[in-house]
Image 1 (cartoon, rainbow, N blue to C red):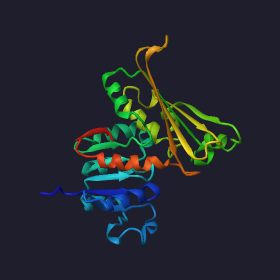
Image 2: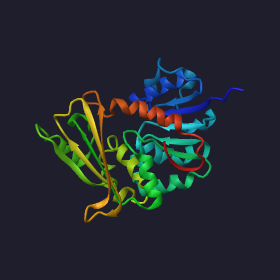
Image 3: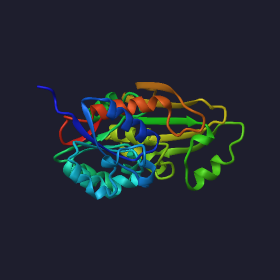
Image 4: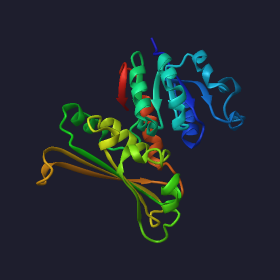
Length: 278
C-alpha cells in the first residue's frame, strides 16, 4: 500500500518560499496544503487559488501534517504555539527564539507535535547537540562573513555597515541573544547553533558578524567548538569548520542553503514531541 503524502503548509513566499513550493509540488510523498504570504497578491498567477490561504488563522482547516515558516520571526511569536497544537512546525526564522519567553512557550507547546529547527548553513549541528546532551560542550562560536550588501541590519549595526569601504569590519562580537534582534534575517545559522548547544543557549554561544567588501560571491560560516579538557591551557577538545557557501551578489541566503533547507523539511517528521534539529 503506498504511503500517504504528507500535507505541508508554507508560510511565506519570498525566494526560499517559492523554492519550497516548487519542490513540494514535484514530489509524490508531499502535498501542498496551503501557501500564505503577507500580501496575497504576490501569489496571484503563481499558486492555484485553492491553495492560497488569505487568513493564517484558518490554517487548521487545511489539515496539515507540517507547517513551514519562511516569512519572518514575528510569525512564531503570533502563531507558533497555535501551529504546534495542530501540526509539526518547522521554524525557518529561529532567531525568533532568542526571545527567552517565546522559546519557553514553544518548547512547552511541543507536547503533541514536534518543533523542528533547520540546520541551514550550520555545519555539525547533530554532533554539537550530542556534546550538549552529555554536558561536555564547553564553548561554541559562530562567525559569519558576508559582503556588506548581503546584510539586513537594524540600529547601530546598520550604521556601522554603511561605513564599510575597502576592508573587512567586525560588526558584532558577543552573545547570539544580543545579535538576533539586530540581524534577524542574517543569523538564523547562529540561532540554530544556540538551540543545538542547549547547555550553553543563546547567552553563552558567541556570534561574530563580519562585513567584507571583497566577498562578492561567497558567504563564509566558521563554527568553532570546544569540548572536554582544559580550555585555559589549550588542552581541550577543539574543532573548527569553515563553510564557503556560493551566493549571488547581494543575496541574504547562500545558494547551497536552499537545498539544505529542503533536506531539513523532508526530515521534519516522525520524531515525536519536543525540539529537534533537522
